[in-house]
Image (cartoon, rainbow, N blue to C red):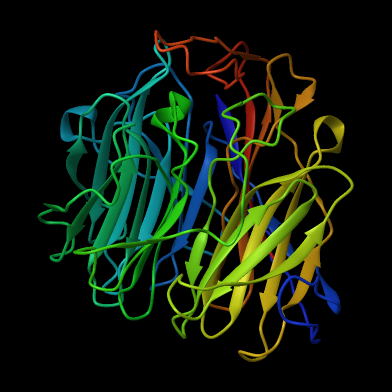
Length: 433
């Protein structure tokens, strides 16, 4: 197998105010790609990327193989993405195991957290959640199995400014939560955030506030609880939670067919002033919500519109009112990736949005002639030099996709990729804007 990382960079300027509430933004400018870097080595779908306080970049993604105990891939770049090295993260016996969802986070002390998930593609069931911890830029690792329950699914990790580490995931019986207050040396299991629903996303705020997006779909799509649709917020590091209705009223059909409007990651983010944001699709429109009271009430704006569906959004925030977002639009030959920088001039202003030209999605599914997103989001981050960085999967390969349906019958037909019929050219595209 061969794969590639690619890092792109852009500039922007935007100013403008429109009415508060549900109006679309008026003033827009363009993000432009200023650099891109590739690295061919191994398959990495649904990537995640972080920057270490000392400047190193880390990227991971899953290979989609059949073995839940496969050693996951992690790469590091010490020169801004110009070159990459694959790190030795340990063995399956050490706990370094997973062939599905990954996440990365870095603590204020430079500790790196690498979260992995195992998935049995014969039964379409999750097998475990594991976390690796490195205190030396990925040279050595300590691994812990956080869970080995049937249906373990969609883990996320985030670190508070005081160093407290939060991890969430789901297993069809609710959203689990563990914390570490000693840089991952020990983990404490907290009360479940909710007894139903999926762990769609996690964000930690500047004062240690925690938000978790709880959605109806859980257990890798094996369970759907349509009435379970919340944003859960904790002001005491996850000891207690308050659940709020999200600022949208969505229909969750449970279908995973590639021509449908698929929902999975519904992102949340805190800015530096403690405001909570949420990004979601309403078909052809992409909407941004903002809450100044930790999720109790919301304002909302339409920030993008397309002539076809928009889906799989992702969102990050920093400072006061500064956000970055990605999403996919279209389908088939028209499938594209989108990147935007969003700025609120002040608490009374509507957002100014600077967008990139749509990015061509160079990943193909099944027979090699249908473009594929390569996962349920593509990540964006603020780099230390002020640019934005995104990572996308590019896969030029014929993919063989089984369609197992568990005994419950809840999992619909969904062509998720597993094995390459021929060696894929996978490009993890890391882009600077």
